[in-house]
Image (cartoon, rainbow, N blue to C red; front, top):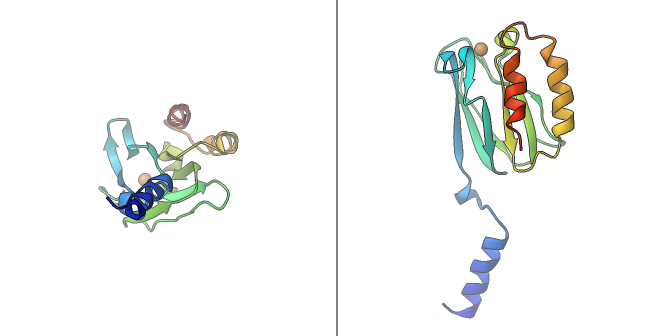
Length: 147
Ligand SMILES: [Cu+2]
């Protein structure tokens, strides 16, 4: 390989993920999942900056709506029963909920790269857990998976 090309290749590697390498992830919105009723699956997801997450309404009457994002991170508010995709460029912890089923503990967490805003996420989780009547333990279980 000519030196110039090699240099480009090394530079491309050093710059990290290019759009071609970004991954797509899917989270299902379910009436019944492995963790019980009214649940995201997987409800905890660790991804890399630049990855895209698509929320799929496997059952109707769910949405995905962001609750907390890191500073300058993406926010989203999916329409009921519709697929919604979000590309997450900023590192940190993202909390989201299903608007009609928050009280049933239908919440989820995405960790993008490093958990730079973990403390803020823990505080926000405490705040919204006051609105959760059932499956309250899910939120803290998901938060425990953040590394
Ligand atoms: Cu729901």
